[in-house]
Image (cartoon, rainbow, N blue to C red; front, side):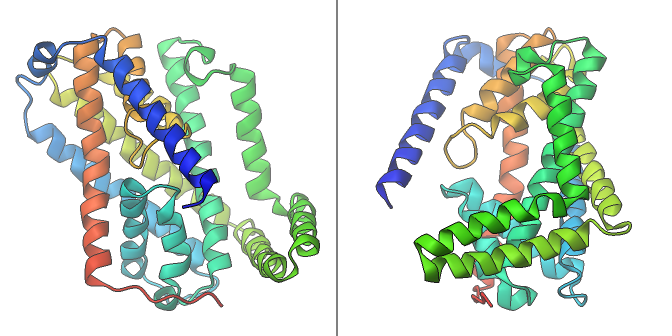
Length: 324
């Protein structure tokens, strides 16, 4: 690892420790154990089913993005690489899963790394857009102030959402800036810069294709379906715990906890996700112990399935690199 990577990892670990301490100082172990009393298996099982539905939608969304460059791709061709990337991100630092998806499965998917990076970019934008929409909806429904959870006001959230929509619908507006950045790197490091510029050109071509016709509408609809299914995971987890007084708070915990993953942390977002999920649940009348038990349960429901399924895929299907 480079010195910069070591510093980034150290900051992530320190922040994770800080947020875990902030949670631990509010509860004691006996109260936490009591919060799990009466938990039934039916609701977590329903949560796992909802999780599967959500990821099935995400995989289909990714397949649609890759369809132009490889129309022969089927859903099952994309499922393994997709889940593998999430498994790697859950246990390895520096978004290693994204690198894995972009480079390790090219031979299997028959697409270039530039195309995959473009789809990752669109994927992140779509997810952020959906999270902002869900956050706005939850804040409006519960009558809460946006600045208390997102750190910014409602107007800023709306502006960010509009900016994301413009980028998704009109990528040509941003293409000159991306290409100019690539050319600047070419001047400083010709060989590396030219490779990067080639990938930027491929990425912008993919973005332009995805913005045409009804493709982007389909991607938005699959994104909405995926996030509604994930919202059900949060809600079912709340229903599973009798100690949770307001199960509907799970719909607020979803966007708040998800946005918290943007904060530097450890792989799997230990600490950061949990602390802000606890805050969201507590804001709607759930006590600290019940909110913490909830955060641990929903975190497990989100972390375990992709980590084990994706990890098994990596072990059973050796990767082949293809960057052309």
